[in-house]
Length: 242
Image 1 (cartoon, helix red, strand yellow):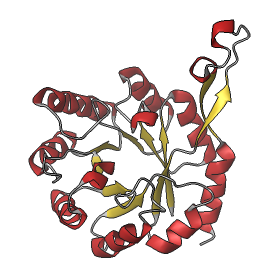
Image 2 (tube, rainbow, N blue to C red; image 1 turned 180 degrees about the horizontal axis):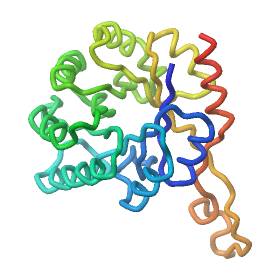
Image 3 (spheres, rainbow, N blue to C red; image 1 turned 90 degrees about the vertical axis):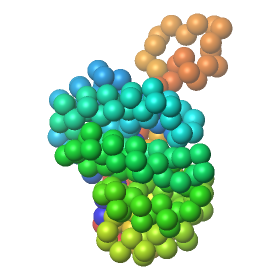
């Protein structure tokens, strides 16, 4: 059993590593679904951490229908990640009809090689998840991150279980969204999956001593992203006990 943690900055990545994360999905803007992290963050995390790191390749928030310019940005970001020696990348592209944009996914996979590729929750916006599953297997993706086409994985557990069965070890099905210490055991039992994705996000108080009176109640100004190390450890304990 494996737990992947999504992180958005150096501090949360360091905390996730200390907590025992098996793999990191490294991104920015997690509240917007995740976008590509800065060049500086990517470089420093690769220098400092030895565990598998998979940067998110997503040029903006929103849908997964990209212009030619955005597609070019994705290629350049992948080339940069490959040059730094990452283990894989996380990406997803759709056509207007809700099908997988197979041609451009394949182009990005060729650009990324030999890095592995996770297809992210763009999968949950596909019109036909079973057709998409077979296409991603044929393309050679390593795994699919999914909440079973629902807002959270516990809500989509039935479809996730069906996808896991149909995948038949040809691709990894990794539940994500709503995966936490309270849901992990039942989700693992319901789906039969062995890899899970979580952010386990929390907030920690800023160390600032001066609090401007106009922003006393501003969480954006005086709280920072955090991860509770003990939550990662507890999830791993629960998974290992299954």
